[in-house]
Length: 460
Image 1 (cartoon, rainbow, N blue to C red):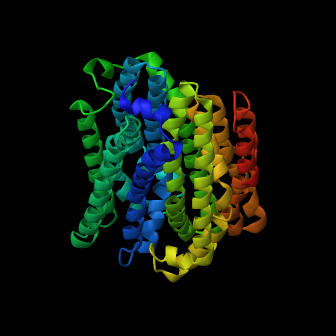
Image 2: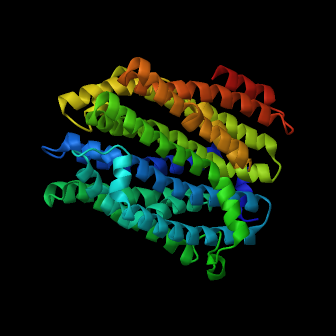
Image 3: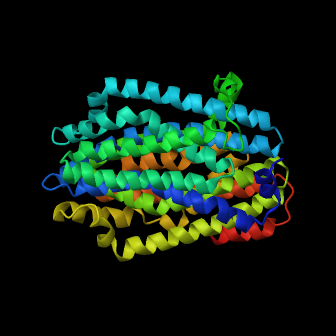
């Protein structure tokens, strides 16, 4: 057991969460900024901003699918690696890392070919119109060139953090984000490349991130070593990666399905600009949700190691602190959204009509923001303990089982407002049910802090 392994099982939980979560939060925020900054620049392109950002909104389901595969490999690999290290099985952890890299390359290549072949049809299916299709094609056509980089960048962000080097993970992501911002400005406003310039800036910056991560492992600087022999796919390892990564993968695929459904509802009840409004709303949502995802990503190796080492009290304490911290983040975010939505929306577009639609939608869409920490943290805790089946069910609960019916039913009674209120309705239902499942789950093993944890969840 090396030093990184040892501190996961002995150091103060609060210190560990700060060490792992702060860099993870930075990494998640940086990852979100790839999309947020693109939308800010695109929404402010002179003369075409409103329709351009609407075209970008049409591409969101495809972008989410790419993210889904990155999470499938990245989270599946890092969770399994943490569990194996907790069990003292270092060689198996090294095999997982090697297989994950190969998987990322293969999946990225296949995804690029398949989507490129049917791009126009896919975009029309996802809500494009004659006025927005060309903008969507211009953006997505460039993004597809860098699909492998996108998946590998997400994967290495997870792996390097789980390797005991969360600071480096954050640095790599920050460099990529800074590069993206600079190139966005240069390509869009200096070279007048428009929406294609934004896409090119994104894939170049993600390419830098992916290559840096590969060099970290290939040059022997990592704790879990990359060996050439481990790059050969092992069916058993691939299945374990898919089993654990399947929950976040399913959630992201479900998100893509929801985005498709929402786009069609928005187009029917509010027109093209409503899709542009959703692109802005989802960006603002990312600003507040990504810190919480950073918290749970920092939580995962701590919970995974201690659960694998049968130190259940430490795993539960990690859950409790993460749950409280994420809820505080969401409460602050909710206050900002409800008190001054114009400030946030104005960063993305100044068109009066688009701003009006977006402000109205934002306040309704994020109405239940304060309580979703229970759903997000609870699901990720269960995933980190290796309970893939339950984690997948809970992941799908919020994004499919409740949300899609709400998207289809509520607009029939409340028109466009029904689309906006579908998400908070699903958030409330899923948070309550996840809290109940989580309480039952933690009773299955010895606990000395059960009453304290139950009080926290009941308060939330």
